[in-house]
Length: 151
Image (tube, rainbow, N blue to C red; front, side):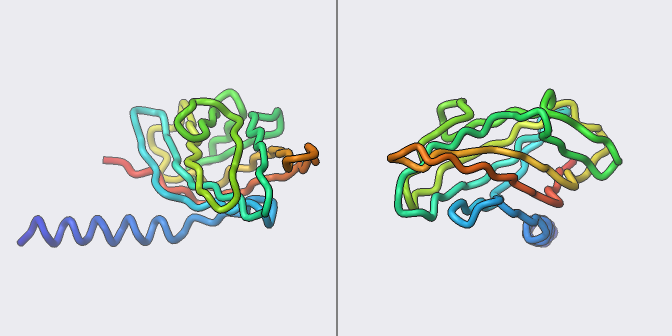
């Protein structure tokens, strides 16, 4: 009985924490949905599903630009040296996004303060090419209040 109550309580807390994540993909044709946060030591992995809402394929180039930044709830500021991105299962930071088919995107944040319980903001400039024609679009992704589950 206690175990069931604890599991239900943990699921409720996870649901509430997930509901607080705010995301602005920076472009009406890109939908980004928060899925989960996984912690391993001082590395935080944040999983998203990215969906191309346009009618044509796009090639997203999600490189770590110089003006990328993120902060935690302890007041620490981080830059691109503490950030890596993987698209799909390739381990790369570029990918072709077919319309309406979600693709897994993982942000890997390193050297995070051991007392931080959330990433308060990620400001992430990126660009993509709409195919065919290679029409470039610059965007800035803004993500707020990502929980960091700690044991």
